[in-house]
Each structure stands twice: as C-alpha cells, then as structure tokens.
Image (cartoon, rainbow, N blue to C red; front, side, top):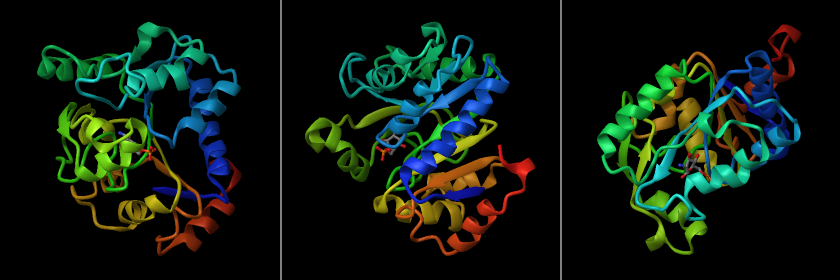
Length: 256
Ligand code: GLP
C-alpha cells in the first residue's frame, strides 16, 4: 500500500485526480470502478474540469440501494449523473450501476460480474471507506472472497448515511454491492478518506490485521493500492512519519 498524507483533503484529492487522469490518457478505453458518498465529490469535480475524453471509457459503480427508485435524489444512479456523468462525454451505454430494483436480483448480480469481465476487468477502482471499514457496501463480516450480491446495512452505516435522507428510518436497509473479491480483481485502487471520523477505520485498514471485520483491510493483499488521506484521517496511524517521508522522497520514475 502507498499511503499519501497531504495537508488537506483538497491537496490529496488533486493528487488522486492526476493518477486517474493518467490512466485515462494512457488508455482511452479504460474501465473505471466508481464510488459514491461525500468523499469523491471533489474528485469528480476536478476530473470534470480536466476536460478528459471519456468517449470510450466504461464505468462500473460499486453499489446501489435496493428498492429506491432510480430517480430518487439519493439513489447512487442520481448521484453519479448529478456529480459526474452529465458533465462529461461518457457514452451512457458504457455506464453501469447496479439496479436496486432488478426483478431477479441473483441473475442481475451474476450479469453485473459478467459485464465487468467482458469489459476486460476494472483498470482503476475509486474507493471511499465507511466508518466501520466497509468498502462498497461490504459490511464487517462480509466474505473476503464475495462477489456482487445483496447485503444488509449495519445500524452504524444507516446512521452515517441518515444525513442524506433526513433520518435513519428513511435509509434503505438493503443494498446491492460489488463483492470484496470483485473489488480485489481491479488492477489498481485509489482509496480516499478524509476527516477524524475515518481515522480509526484507516488505521485498522492500513496497519491492523487482515480481517473480515474490517473489510478494507484486505487491500493489504493488493499489489497496487494508494490511500489518500488528510491529516485528520491519518491521525491514528503509527507510521505516518514514514509514509510522509516515503512520499516526499519518491524518485522521479515512481511519481505517476
Ligand atoms: C457509503 C458508500 C461507500 C462509501 C462510504 C463512505 O455508504 N457505499 O462506497 O465509501 O459509505 O461514504 P462518505 O464518503 O460519504 O463518508
């Protein structure tokens, strides 16, 4: 893992946006895995401002609420169109978001996995992290080998996401999410975490044992994961001085 601690969320997001832009310029038909939540909003703004060519890019979103109409303002479908897709020249046919209203969920999940494979696999996956260490909506105790499927949200996650819905009872209890195995198949990961409320999950992910109780900790097994942090999200890391030193002394050839 490469741990990139910057002076602010904005500075960390700028570096992450350059990594993504680099992938899109090198491979015009890249396959991106995309995330929702407050964390990547600024990342998407920066990518929009870069005027990249998205015509051949394909995207696969991590997750979606079950039972929420697509047009609901808090559906991840609405989120992605409002915050990214409507501002770029991506072909809508290349946009993939799990359907939380699919009549046959089991076959929809299987088909989602097949579509990722048919597209050639995910080149770069953008990730946020839940306060309980979830990635996508893979809550603690999710199988580390899981594939796209329905999950039940924890009380903690519903409380965390209540801010988008008004109150906790409005937050759907079920979701469809790429599995941890699906996420681990991506060639590269860009994980963003900002703010003191993420500090514990970040420390457990980076420096704790690999465990299904902290789903993001499996990223320790991935050969290309970069974790972008602000000082508050990094504050419980034991080795933050080392990570800062490594980043500041990167040889030129490593700085992509
Ligand atoms: C959400 C999403 C995750 C996201 C996480 C953190 O519920 N399913 O993909 O990374 O929780 O969200 P936020 O960025 O709003 O803190």
